Length: 217
Image 1: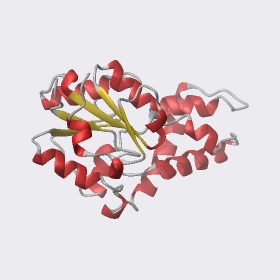
Image 2: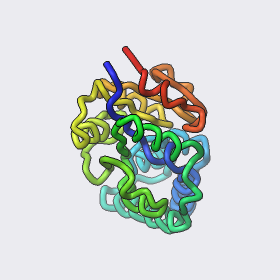
Image 3: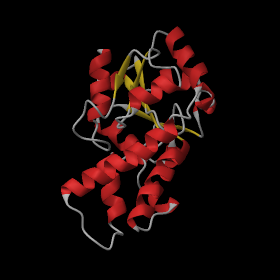
Image 4: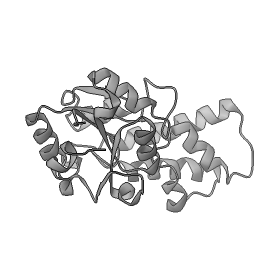
């Protein structure tokens, strides 16, 4: 069973916006008087915006209505987008372009599978909006990781069966989603220690092209 497509998470895999997320959540939390630190921030990896907010609100001294929660999420996203305006092509992570180019030469299709609704804007900022064969993101799905919906959508857009797809992720939730969707999982960064990963590396600079395309069950 050969790999015909590789689906990449965006944040932490293609480009690092983790600190932007932290700063934005921290700014929102400080305004609300809610304790928030980097340890809590680790729990937000690969999680949707609203699910992340629920985690943060666990430490709130008051309850929030659904309308108030929507306002908090929108406020955080505005802070985040303001910070994203500073992204450039220089922020693409090491090894990304070499690996993507190698996959293309091998005839392997490539896609983005991200829960972020800011995916189109991020790809535009790093000038990779037309680089992938397909993009599946938070604007097109109802369930975020560890639900496999975004990866299954990416596979569908590519026209490749899930069993012939590999997913590259930096979050445990993303690895779980890949496996739930019947795909191979490559853990990088934080997710390199995930026991469910079929392949692991510190970043894409340490992932060999042949190690992905030769993945077998």
